[in-house]
Image (cartoon, rainbow, N blue to C red; front, side, top):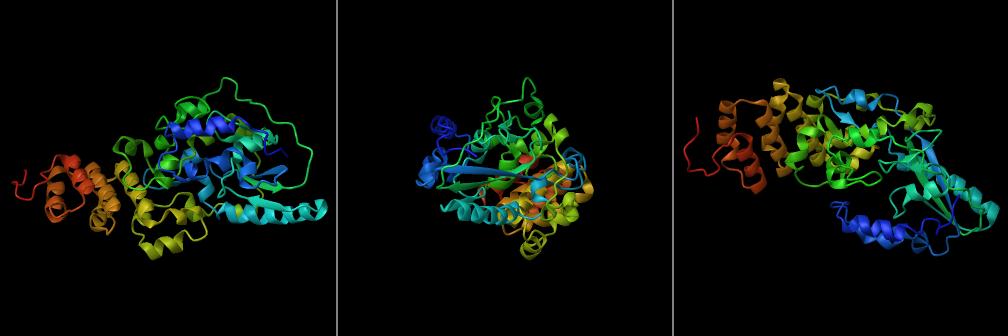
Length: 362
């Protein structure tokens, strides 16, 4: 438990992070920044904040998944039912009990509201924000899902947790895209989780190879934290891993149409990203697979209605197919392409001509 004014540094830290552009295109971080930096601005009657964490330790080592190049690596939290639904139900139950006992109203929040859960959780003694900016618990490692109950009741606060990272920098060193400009600071624009989930449009070319087979999120910095050795198995059965999402074949994912995508990922966090962005990620993974047998899946996507998908398909074809085949595909699909960024992908794939009246290269 903590107070709404327990982390006054948020009023300086959050604006500085936003000013540096480290939030990327996540405009919603700016839109309600004042409420994020000051919980009482979200609900002025707040007197106490109860922070809760649910253990969500994965059943498989996430680092094993990134070695399976013909399969998609999905972040551990997304291989299961959407945790928002599970945790919010429990918070409402607990909040109702607290309101009845205290006689004061409460509000419950799980991630979707402008609440800075991690610094508040540290102030409440649940853990500390590690160098990768994620909350770490001495009992559960960094596999905690957080929720908050705001109450009008005056409750005794707990002592805040102190930092126990010491000189360790495993989480910083393993990041495939160098997304940490300094310890305790994340540049989302370089983070694979941001690029594959939040980012709209083409993924910048400089990051594609580093993404590997990660089709939704990235767990590398979480998986190497030494505090995870104390984490026990998650006990909430509704957050059990779905085996069909643990390491799905890329060829299977590439064939998903809109209806298939919605059916496959119903009830999971992946559904919110949408089929087009997800297929973009799958095609990047196919291009990184080194498996020419997967190239035909990318060829099929050259005619996808979504230009971002088509652009990713061109990139994948450029990685897996020879020059002669690329020229044939360009003649069939690239010469009539109207989207500028997709035409640029054709050019970059193999130095192909971009003007329809130029002679075909051999």
